Length: 229
Length: 276
Image (tube, rainbow over all chains, first blue to last red; front, side):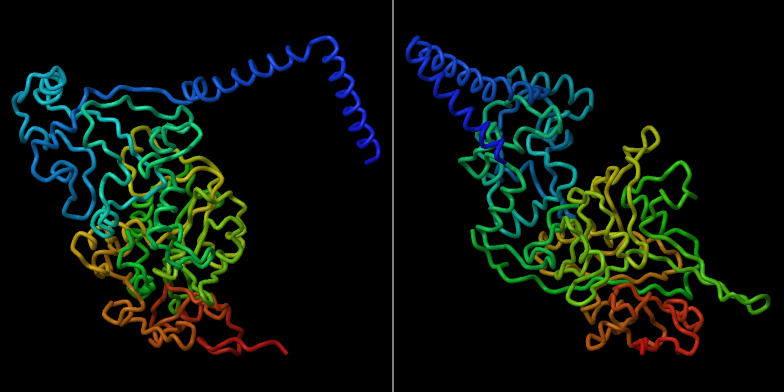
């Protein structure tokens, strides 16, 4: 203990001497300059380079215009993203649904041409990349939230219905999860309820909505088995 | 966004009644369980140190020679002990909150992503119902496409066990929401082993619901730790007070007697006497 104290004291002494030296020789300016450069470099590294390294990008097979489709259909989101009879959620539509209208090209956009040529006539499913796919261990019930709690799609998915083109799909190189799970902000900040889809976000909303039960013996809260599988 | 489901949902207690006089030991329940729950099989499944069987059939014998010899097959899923107030042996010892007892369903859950593999629960479980993944699961090429998307496969280093096919309950709840029902109907939630049994030896349902067949068979007595009032029924190691939710039925006295460690002078079904 005593040696440590001595060392610390020596360190302080050193610092003091250097500081006074710097003042005398004008090196203080350099120290501040190097600090600022280093600080700026670490900021760039953390906010710009790190996300680029962590996330890889893929493009959707072709761009999809949500806004255009929402105008055409009668039932809003549920026209294409509907519940099956067994209560499960259909998610991304299959080709059969699209061809109900798109047997022939309906517009003259390049994306629709790709769709009809490469998928409809070839009878191939479109390999859409799902932005909101949760990790494998998560059980999420659309029925519980949309029918049970009468929540709006926007609460979790944001204003995707108003988007005019498909943004690139980004996924974490290590976990392979979509970037939408962690959120676009690398520091994990979220302003809106749809900015992130982490477990914390589920828990926060459940707490706010007052749907925390006491079914768990271990935690006196909701049992893990409610949302895990 | 407050909703009307603020109160706790109806208290259910899912359990099983397995008629050992009907069981032929065919193993269909084991196979159904393995394929339903994405349970990986090992190169040598006879090596019971590494093989994983959430549902396992044991062969019992009365130990007598011909012509009095008799055997009985006993399927053993996780017994989903309630203990006293949900303190089942495994839940009490888990330091990671990876296993938990749900008062809503009475199911002992195992959240493999929280488990760090200390295996205390395996030591605590009197039924050897818990299994440790010594290796990452390996499926023959192409077979991973046959895995059920409703059950997450486990990695090495975690413990797993029977969940009463909880994912089926989750899916049945989806349907109940769509149909505007508060409760999941009896036939909507059945475990894979129950449906696979060709002899109809397994009956599954809510032990708290008098309308369910399992309640009518078992007639659990809440005053005596859920003990069955059916004279044919017994539970495994009942005298430990684990208060399990899997009941076995047999008309053969020696079978009922093999369900616990009775001393020679003790009668089958008799409570154990404290030592003097």
